[in-house]
Amino acid sequence: MDNSSLKSPSLLRYDGEAMRLIILAAAWTSIAASQQYDFVLRGGRVIDPGNGIDGRMDVAVSNGRIAAVQPDIPAAKARRALDVTGFYVVPGLVDLHAHVFGYEGSLVPDKTALPAGTTTIVDAGGSGWRTFEEFRRTIIANSKTRVLALLNIVGKGMIGEPYESDTEDMDPIKTADTISKNRDVIVGIKTAHFSKPGWTAIDRAVDAGRKAGVPVMVDDKIFTNSGRTTREELLDHLRPGDMHTHMYNDRQMELVDRFTGKVAPWMTSVTFGGAGLRTVYLGSLKGTALPCFASPVSGLPMIHWNER
Image (tube, rainbow, N blue to C red):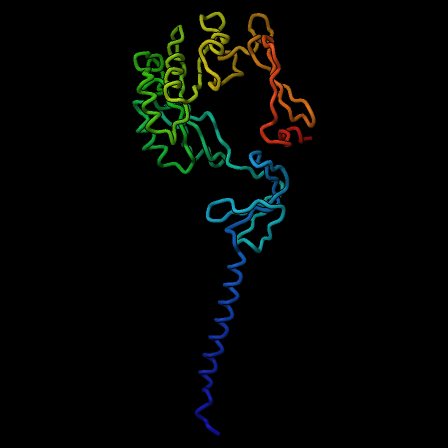
């Protein structure tokens, strides 16, 4: 018998341990290969109007991106599985009217937006053409929240009176130029808190909006008995696509005439009809036609129509 072919006990132990490591490595590789997602949210109600989804779905995430939205994604396919049964799962919300710069009541985006599920906010007029670069450098560039902006027609931004009524600082050309250089984050123009009579602030904001090709948001007091009326603002000064914020505050807009208590004749009514209440009808007391259009998401009623 050739003893040279026999291995010592230590070598046998070494070979056995190596084999176990090889088997464990292969098993781990197999498990890792099957775990194609970083994590999966299981059992929640997914509401995604953009893709026509409203129901119980699982959502898988990989490399910071939504990788799959399906009725049943096995937990074994993800490195981590979270049970969100009883919760809504929605795309990041958008806050169209926020204040995170300039204004004395400004908030920190990442401390207030993200905890509420809001991933994009629009700062409404905190900065003007004079101060936007500071806003971009200090807030926009340093926030995990996506921060967009409505640029104030006032160059100094929303810093209170007398600055917000300073017509000398309302420059449509410089405002439009600032927008053209920052179109990745500036989405419109804001005029707010103009305390003088007349239409200078709104007209210059609209002029800048026309030059830059962006909409205008108005935040201003409009009283029937103060020289500026809602009818004139909406029909004579603003364009289609412009907007007046705080619309249910009758110091801002008169949906209901404060003297007669009747719906203002220039306001538009909205009615849902047709099969499944999925056709939107627009009507006006002064209108001569009844335009209509389909719901933004074909075949999907608004969420609250399904609530009991």
